[in-house]
Amino acid sequence: MSTEHFPIRFGFLSTAGIGTKVKRAVDLTEDAEVTAIASRTIEKAQEWAEKHQASKAYGTYDELLADPDLDAVYIPLPPAMHAEWTMKAAEAGKHVLCEKPLAANADEAREMAEACRQNGVQLMDGVMWVHHDRTAAMKKIIDEDLGKHRRATAAFTFNYGDNVPMQNIRVQPEMAGGCLGDLGYYCIRAILLAFEDLPTKAFAAARFFNGVDFNVSGTLWFEGDRMAAFDCAFDTSFRRWLEVTGTDGSLVCDDFVLPGSEENSRFWVHGPKKGEHNFGECVQEARMIEHFVAAIRSGALNPEWSETAIKCMQICDAVLESARTGQIVEL
Image 1 (cartoon, rainbow, N blue to C red):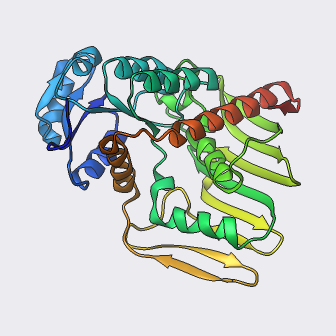
Image 2 (cartoon, rainbow, N blue to C red):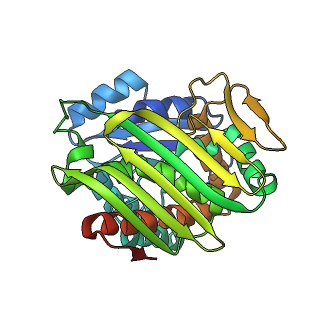
């Protein structure tokens, strides 16, 4: 169906909580709307549709994918289900915005990207912070003002405390849970923002709980005398910071994943070009939808998002292998 004179119509696969944030982002985006919702029961889908003003509700995901009026789907399902439903959506001719981690592993991510390419649909992983106005400004400074790159460091953690919610997919191994995919994926994406290429090797240590990685610290080696480190955890106080260091200066952002406010955000540069950089209003989730919709409307697919997501998954696989074996893993 041509989208030239119509809004991009989204269908959501699942009533997962994150969908409320993405629904708001779609509502804030010109020429985009959430038309349909699917759940495992029609009653749950109808309840969500009524609450969020979606015109169609389906009791199965397959029914939603068969809807000819939908242009794109948003997939907030557990990571273990991403590959199956992304490929089904691609075969149904729907563009795909899929929550992170893109897949359970890099092999699945490659299959998803190839299915979308073959069917001429856009694939994007739902890493919202990379679409913030601030991120583009940080990237420019990283590339131009820090000198030769030496080190990137990132952390994203929160603490479940003593009452870990065992029903949550984050701690279910069969759903590909774990803090690496849930939190570390953001850190690795930030390291790739700085360095772009894959590391040559990885080493990691982790604490496991209920069969999933619960606390992970990783070290990555890159060509050109560059190194990176990150940590992610479900048992550490809330942190979400990034530092990129070169021979001439460093950039620091203390809330790179989620700015403290939609009205303003900031980061700092240390060195000869030191200073605080401030930005006005930006809803990063809405920027993500804007970029996704623009790619659909352009008719020219943007492969960068899926290529970077595959790199993230390759690094996640190597880090997890190292954490389980205690060995340095070459990429």
